[in-house]
Length: 360
Image (tube, rainbow, N blue to C red):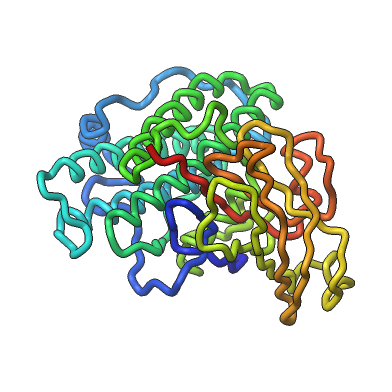
């Protein structure tokens, strides 16, 4: 499992750098998840304000669709654990998680149930095709109060919204258009959630006209940081998605302006990087995803080494590209990419997550 540092979530800038967290969390223990009986499933649906889909499934699916569904299930299990822990902190009146009128507990309980239905639905689809369906791991979250928890939820939901775009495009390419309508509805539902999280944090509910896309390997790498090592009841290699080396944004805050950002990449285990270790000039780039723009690549400079750790600077071209909201950065050996799908093959380290927040 790649060790990738997460910076504890500041609303205006998010690269994930994760301090040691003693307490860890698993799935809910009171409602039968992830194996509810019919009565427990109905109770989850009632809390979620809606029922699970009941339409027929296609007779067969592409292998790429199975992999995408496995990643989605893994992510949904993580989200269930996160909102379960958040709800538990609120209802247990843990200091920092005050809920004066009880409204937040009601809202988070509904979101938790909705995420449980998302997870259960994908798991059941995988089981229908006799494919591996990941069960929950144990997780740790770098937050100690409700404000930080909501900020974290906003960031990982923004990444989910980008990852689901990638999944839906993959379904269509693989001839599995039967899943497009279903997951388009999930994208809308996650977008409703994120508008709420953004509003709570003082940002405009709608981030930008076209939300930032992502790719499966970036999401898969980022998710590992929340997993307690060795806690998954399966081999992570069962989900055939590559992991990238860690990339961390050093800037505490990224404002809505042109600026130079500083990154650190752990290239110790990147074979292609070994010939460059110690060198202060490299033909490398930071490549940004933002909105639905083609990948934006800028050259890196001011390279410093500490063993296999490379620290360097790169421009953040905000003004030219109006880079509000989420930007996803990768250290790449190439530039001039034709689209986001071409980036992972030339990625040395990723992802660094950058949030520029438009306050209201």
